[in-house]
Image (cartoon, rainbow over all chains, first blue to last red; front, side):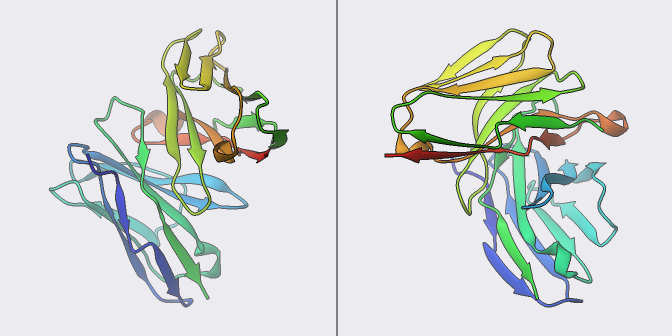
Length: 113
Length: 115
């Protein structure tokens, strides 16, 4: 079974731009969670989607948004990029809501200049 | 909110040595997960623990769910160079009344293995 895939792997943007990251979960997994990883803050939860609905959200500004499609693929968007948004963005999928085991993709490394 | 404290922050060991690391919380967790992350990659799930007192092995790795449900331990026996990486503990978080899809992570333990 293929693992979680994320595209692109690397991205360089400038301040003020917006960016869209994509995540394809493991086949059959319907829950997709997004995390931001930085050296200073570690891994921080952004949001979770299940059956195209956002069911949980972390403490991030409204510039961070996401969505999930009917095939469980998910995208996250960051608008008006700031330097502090430079991070590794990780997507994780799990089989169902009641299972806590999450399987991560390789991440998208975003650099904001 | 719920926080996980991992220790030690880093370890430098010789190949063949055993490794122990732990994770503690002020809150009760119903699940403990241990992940390993290599540079530039996403975390890989090593072991999942679901019951207090549970001891689970995965090859040379053994993890335990503390009986107080506020801590967990990971041991690596006979370390090898490919064990190098960052090890994270994690657990589902109920902040805000729901834990859907949200894991809280420890700060990580950086493991270096000298051949």
